Figure 1 (tube, helix red, strand yellow):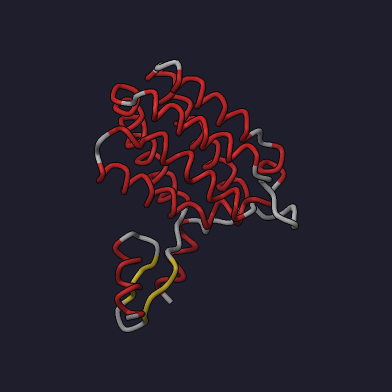
Figure 2 (cartoon, rainbow, N blue to C red):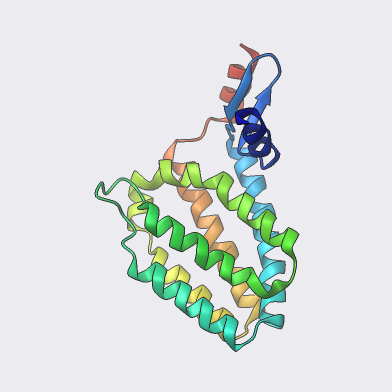
Length: 188
């Protein structure tokens, strides 16, 4: 059963199977994380455009409620160096609600997987000065307002800016291996 669960996680890119060595947490380099961020941006820009086109008043109400829940949940845990799990859950709900009415289950699944892959690195970078001073609440509010205004181009650009800022915080934090460091470890 554990091997089946690990195989499922490997299918979602969250762990890697190394032949004759076992399963390991996926270790991303800066280039891979940048590539995954670009993929996430493109997937979610398309998804938010469809969601805005197809979403109704009930969706808008649920989106506002998800945003309110996230904004009302403390972002930092007891340790100011960690993101609170409750906020992280509310954050994930808000981002999934943005895409909910797009009508493409595979797109929503891919977006969730891409978000899950970067969660570990976002948590590691949470203690950095850049992460602490970043106004994530303002970023989410701007995304919400553009979405409710049905401004597809602006909502997509704000999502891209949001994810790109996360990438910048992570890469500047030093938590990622450089591609050459990771390659060296795999060769050993």
